[in-house]
Image 1 (tube, rainbow, N blue to C red):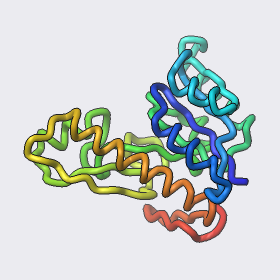
Image 2 (image 1 turned 45 degrees about the vertical axis):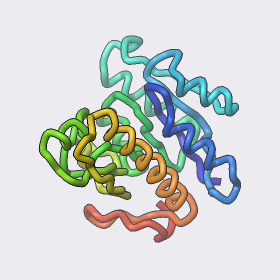
Image 3 (image 1 turned 135 degrees about the vertical axis):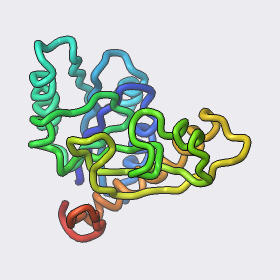
Image 4 (image 1 turned 30 degrees about the vertical axis):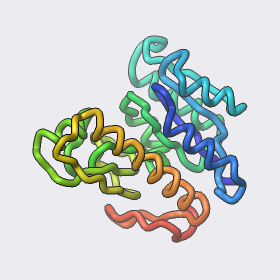
Length: 204
């Protein structure tokens, strides 16, 4: 069975979507562990309720960010994942982590990359006045929301949208995209050619 480690920092709604999907054996993947950079998150509670092991690696517990990064990679490695999903994980991973898991770690972004990178995708889309935005699933690299794109979904921008209403619709699309794409990766593998990610092309 294809093994997934999910890293969370907050409420874990994307995690819950993956847990729900993985409950069906036909999905082809299982969440083997959930990690966090802080204690007591709702995401951890969701994992514990599902009987999934949890680990916490807090930045303040280490003398340097590099040591934290190495410890995070070690904890992830202990669960032998085929794929790592950053699901609302609010820390940038570093060189040591990327050396070991850069080609097997995906993250979501609430905009259509390469537009509106960073923390404020929905707000930036509204400010710019675009008529369509959306969400992106991508492989994590050393940049900010810059890795090869696995999947994208579009979300129309309504004239009366606020940042909150737009972001909620993006998050709904994001959950569907994540569950669908991770399932396809688990069942059919993938291949990366330059910046193109081809799903269903054999082992990742």
